[in-house]
Amino acid sequence: MSDATVACFDGVTHYHGATRALHALSLEIPRGGVFALLGRNGAGKTTAIRCLLGLLAPSRGRISVLGEDASSLPFAVRDRIGYVAEGQPLVPWMTVGEAASFQAATFPSFDRKLCDDHLARLDLPLDRRIKNLSRGQRAQVALSLSLSLAARPELVVLDDPAMGLDAVVRREFLEAMIDLIGDEGRTVLFSSHVLADVERVADRVAILDRGVLRANAPLDVLKERVRRLHGVFPDAAPEAPALPGIVRSTRRRNELLLTVAAGHDAAEARVRELGARHVEWETLPLEDLFIEYTSASGGAA
Image 1 (cartoon, rainbow, N blue to C red):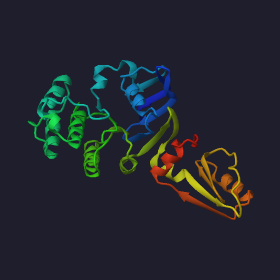
Image 2: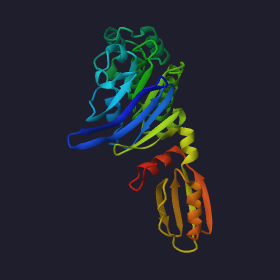
Image 3: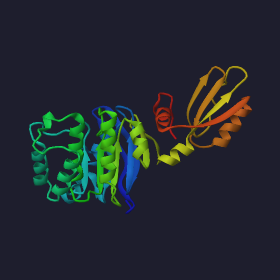
Image 4: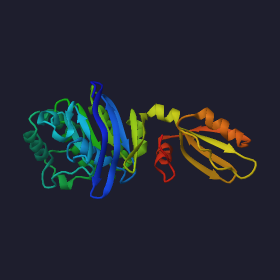
């Protein structure tokens, strides 16, 4: 793993019993910026994150994090990682201040001042019990505690941290996240089902589908390269041509739709050869790209 990479999956496969959650996942997470891990429910996102953190052992393959094997991370390396789990699990009977004190006692480099300053900015009183907070407030507390595990955490892992939050709270959460990771060199691995949020903050995205990596690229590059071709025919549309680089194909009466990740010129030429009277290219927002890759008829890039 190079200095430009904060974590690396090398051929990682993982089974939950007889169910395969990840298949031969090879993926590098570059240092700095926000890396979004996307997928439908059951795609393997949480499994990948838990393997990365050493909470699960891969059935096959290897993962390195901050230069160490993820299966045996030294405490000094764990202390350089912040983590907010799905659902923001916190001890409900603790007050906000007690939760911060517990974290400070558990992690020697916990930055209590950073935590208290952030909680004060969010108007979260230290004497309020966790069970009496709203879901959005619990998410903010979890983020504050995670990002304060070290004075300057190098890697922050957020597993769908804003799940179930309303639009206003999600926006506040994302802005707080960006503020706190703005220092040069910090890296965020960010899993989310809310693709509009991802599109706002992510520098790079990877898409998992049933445990298989379908796409991995900077967000702007992915949106530029993966485009949809509309071919209109005088009669019923023909079957889609078998060409490399086609992610998904759809026939709608006299229209053939091809989502193409590579070989755009070849795809257009072939559609014209099949008799299309009109051909047009369309760029896609992230939500549409995600659907193209993870629908039942989607393919690999």
